[in-house]
Amino acid sequence: MSESREVFVDTIGQLHFVKGMVRYDLVSYQPGKEGAEPTTEEKLRVIMPPDGFLATFNTMQRLIDQLVEKGILKKVEKK
Image (cartoon, rainbow, N blue to C red; front, top):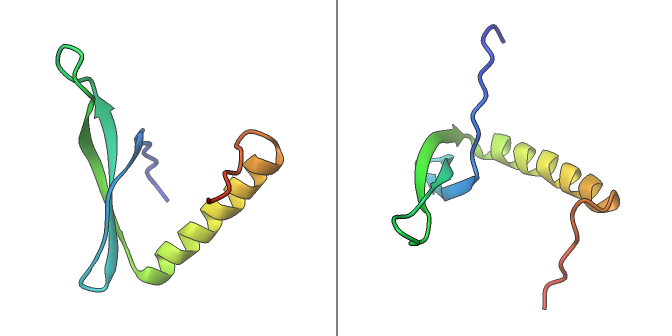
């Protein structure tokens, strides 16, 4: 990789599957007007094949498990 770029985002906005590809929009929160709820602003769209998405999910799950083990995150049981 010759060029490195960092993008800060707050969360994933839309997540969908179209024409054989997983697509998700990374968004940042923007302040609302005069006490209104924050709005979201799309920063970047990521498009990847399903197997790449699954590999990404598995990588994230391993990190989540490590953060739970260290007490940084708490596991919430489904009711």
